[in-house]
Image (cartoon, rainbow, N blue to C red):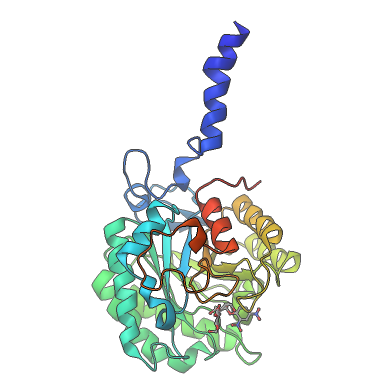
Length: 342
Ligand code: DCB
């Protein structure tokens, strides 16, 4: 009797959990019936601090970010994004469109890389974050007119698809760039423009100090709009307990948070890799059901990048183990539910 119980009950359960088959289906990009994450979750909505499915069930989405599309745009195609969906189990892809440093303001054709990302994501049934990557330009108001024009166009073309997530300012920064003074007024203007075309897709707002001061936004959130979330960014080698405290404070105040970018390295994108510190963060995100996107898909050779230097130079996907960096191997295993995050 005892042996039968072990053989028929315990062993299959053990095997399932080891192979990942026992994984909660809500963490799968495509489930066993072949339904994609967008098929299953549909139109996303925000309830309180939680990101929820169309049916109102709280979820945690996980995925990968491109590196700056002016440099790593070769990965913004269906081959690579499809590989990331099928082999890495990503549920969301982020198209990081820089404004300066060779980005959209200087080189508007970069927008095509965003369009390619969106079209691939729609075909593949995953979510796609359209990231207006404010960075060295610091103050989002500098290119506010361009942002409104850009997001209005994206919303007109794709706003009817539930796949689209708008991220309207990656990382505002600089001590003169404050929530009340620049970021919130910018966000209200851009949200207004998007909402006049697209009434319901998720909009994610950057926060002061490279999207770290979520606590400041939480004291004065945007009012009268639905399906708005706020960005928290961290790099495991640089940011730890202090930043998690800020996030907890913001959550306590009712702020819905989406980590649209985090890295296993230090804040420069290099250094490390800090896998133990990353695990503490991943555990925190899991506990609070905070969605996350990892920085980034690049073969530049920096530690946060998932490819080793010069791997996949043409952007074809189908990566071998030897194409992956230490961070790449780790993130892939986490996404595939092969590393247990407590
Ligand atoms: C953010 C940016 C992202 C940047 C990464 C890593 O910046 F959103 O664009 O990516 O975090 O720094 C890096 C790339 C490099 C590239 C560089 C400049 O990985 O290959 O050369 O952008 O384009 C942060 C995040 C946090 C902090 C500072 C920055 N911080 N920053 O806490 O001080 O100055 O870029």
